[in-house]
Image (cartoon, rainbow, N blue to C red):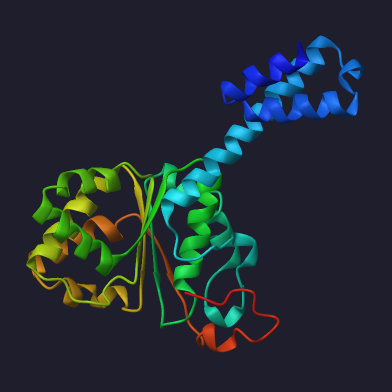
Length: 250
């Protein structure tokens, strides 16, 4: 009977139940449980297994640049950010409020790592997250325009609770790029959150976007209700050999 039950669990993809029940049988502990305790144990195991697989799936789909975590962030005072503020981002309440985070600073200071750490935390809390290098995303959307998959790609971006636009402003936007950026931001405004990282100060984003009218429209939607982290200090990459430095990228 137990063998048949295990096989049915496996075929129904109740993997959490399968492993727990199999372990209980092999260890001879099934008799130690009441029927209610056994059912509760099996359901709890299945719940945890599905939750963990869901998180793993979200992390894979997000395609983060770095495997990062809030616990490994380097809170050096000279980097010019408030530890308490950053840890508050870890509860991801900014996502439920449809707020944005803008992270600026020189190359190697850790912008991408921080954004990825917040993104990983959001995945663990059940949010759908998508990471993109901004220039590569625009290039990908231009190809999608040509092959007819543009609407599908934009709709996919819109469905995510959190979008990370990394290395914003590395390349100036042309007319097509501005229009695509505007569509992405407009679709997300007031409905989902975006994290933007950039080497360029926010005050100079107008120049990067190019067209004054379009820049006004885009930045009004990005900057409004946004939190800002303006990182300072030397490149973290230069310090990666330091044993006290846990965070080495960004």
